[in-house]
Length: 200
Image (cartoon, helix red, strand yellow):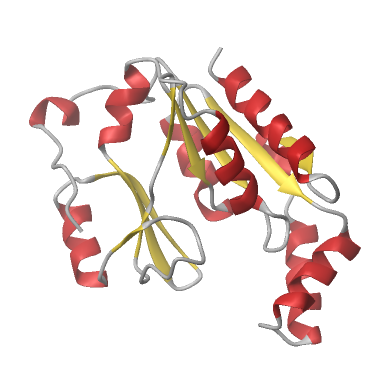
């Protein structure tokens, strides 16, 4: 892990961070969040006002999940102490961090798009003046089928996961909900439109 260090001038800048926007894209396993984010990244590749944040996570890169920056726990803790993260949090036994450099890009008027975590939403909402949440969902039976097809969890674990999904109220953050139960391109285009709208 090799992140840019935070200049002293940045430390004195006021919060919340304003200028551009921060978009957190959330969604449960099986909703197809990563697929839609990849779709949006491709569609917006030529748009210099939008950038996609690579999270630092204390898990190895495996090529199957999101394109993150892997970090050992000790290195992650050292980066926190050095002020290398704009925001960091823990969830599911892992540590997550967002590079401090995203703040300057948002202050310059750009829109940051980030694979979000429910555990981080309240803190991110407090940090960024223009904060939007986009919730990727799918019908319960679709989620159940997709999770079962992965073969990673027992039926009881799948049901427990669906219960946790039902307990999350995206409306608490004024989230825009996108249904990815059926045509992926339709849902992907809706995500692209929502990202563009957040930056206006």
